[in-house]
Image (tube, rainbow, N blue to C red; front, side, top):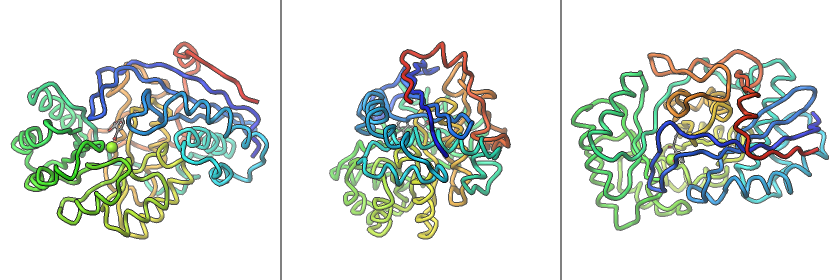
Length: 368
Ligand code: OSB
Ligand code: MG
């Protein structure tokens, strides 16, 4: 496959409601989209870098720079037998996984379309329906949190994850457990706690959480080993895992029992599949994390979630939870059983709405 052209676009989309985490509040998403042309087919990818370097160091600006000045010059000069070779060809770029993933996933979509195959089949997926959960931001009050959780349970979602931070942890979990003793419930701290907080985190054991996601330092595997030794609740790592090497270290050291996979954080479909295989080998389950994606990133997440070891409900939810109107056709919908039926069309299986994307575009650069 030869990729002749890549178009970078930045679109801006207001979220239906502000999303608050221990890292801050997001109200408008700035999203870098990559469109590639390869072997006569078009493919789309979405960069999950944020507006600020708070979840990771990558931002829309660093991703644009990395894509235009370092990734694209390599990819444009190469002929690939398959999109799966792109990841290794970009291995000399250290970090900037979200930038690399945006281009790599776009190429996968193009290859699947060129072969007239659904992307999930090309990736080797085994599931035609994926289990879905939701991620619920920090709310202004316990009442508001309960209303939000009740609405998501009514919609059918199989698992509730709430964002926590110091001062918004035991109370909301206790309140939810009183109302919903048996639901699959978990918390995500986005690295908001320190070793001094171990007693508090141990106190959460009595609520039988499905897992505690990334409680400690974003780059501190060892602190998670220390905590996991003291907890029977599984720790799930998100921010700490950027590579196969990190995943192997985390598993061998006992830093976690579950790994959240994000295409952007690990560098795209090929890297994700390798980490998936390693986790499967080690009997460490995976689930797909979300980054407040538009439909294009959402569609790639659905494809990845069809891989065998994605046995837990992910943060892949309906378009309408975040957007008044999504940029793909049809929008992503969730069944009353809290699942997404994987599309059967070629590539990501959803069509980007060009006119809408054009209208939302605030910056565009064509690379040839
Ligand atoms: O840690 O999973 C996270 C959103 C932005 C940054 C980090 C995270 C999240 C979410 C949102 O939890 C999940 C979603 O997209 O629905
Ligand atoms: Mg997380």
